[in-house]
Each structure stands twice: as C-alpha cells, then as structure tokens.
Length: 133
Image 1 (tube, one colour):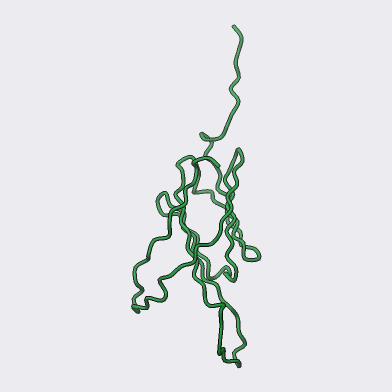
Image 2 (tube, helix red, strand yellow):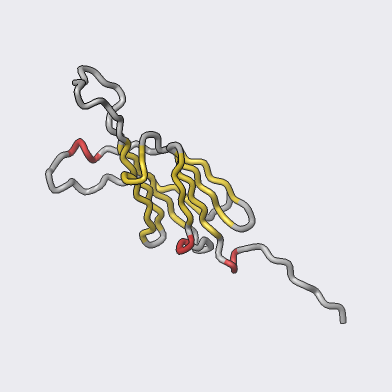
C-alpha cells in the first residue's frame, strides 16, 4: 500500500449532553485496504450496523467512519444475561491529497462497508509519448 491513506487512532469524543460516559467507548472495526492504478478500496467490517446507524464523512483531510450496531430482541422478552451489547464503531483515516475525496462511493452490504476513493487525475500513472527528432 502506498502512503495514500494512514490510519489514525480513534480519539476520545466529547461527552454527550446527557453526561453518559458509557457512550464514549468505541470498537475499532477491522479494515482491509486495496489499491489499484485508479483508486483505493476500503472494506470495513461493521456487523449489526444498518444504513440508518452509519455515518461516513470527510472532515478536512480525515475520513471518519462511525456506526452503531443493534442486536434485535423480541419486545416481549427480558434479557437476563447478554454478551452481545450495543456496539459503537469508529475509525478515522488521514487521506492523501492524491485522493479525490469529493468522489468517494460508499456501499453497505451484509455488515461490510465498501468505500472506493478515486485517485485524482494528477496522481494516476500515465504514459508519456516520446517523439523522435
């Protein structure tokens, strides 16, 4: 992988207005990054996160992924013990200026977020014609 993208550790967010400190802990989702001549493709595992609970944004040179997983339970049943809790995910990347963040494509399918970040035209490899004479 080139230096087009760097991972940044998740920062501790500001406390919500309610003062609930439990909401401040995030899981860091595993991510695979692939590169070809024209783009970077990022695959992030976000099990249990649906479209309504997913946020993807570019803030300056940072790409931020945030999501909250929901574990569905029947309304008439009371949980007496549970290991699968509501999970909040957050991951942040620093984007190279060689990437065109205005043209990012995002798709969420089966708990996997796929982001395709095109390289700018100037950053793409190109062949230069050499004339004789």
